Image (cartoon, rainbow, N blue to C red; front, side, top):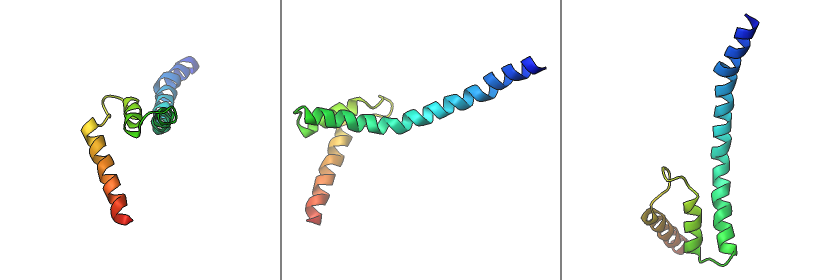
Length: 85
């Protein structure tokens, strides 16, 4: 009974919980990795638009926004800052 319970708990309970924790931690770190890649590209002399593209490339293809969506949100942000000033 002890061996069965140990194997059941390790594969049926502890394994899935550990996998879920790993997934959540990777999602939290993903944002920092995107920002890091963008800043590194900019610090190495890339134009801001090109640096944003470097950051966009680090996003998985399933979640990656299109270049048009990035450009549109970048343009809207600049217009909002001009109105505020």
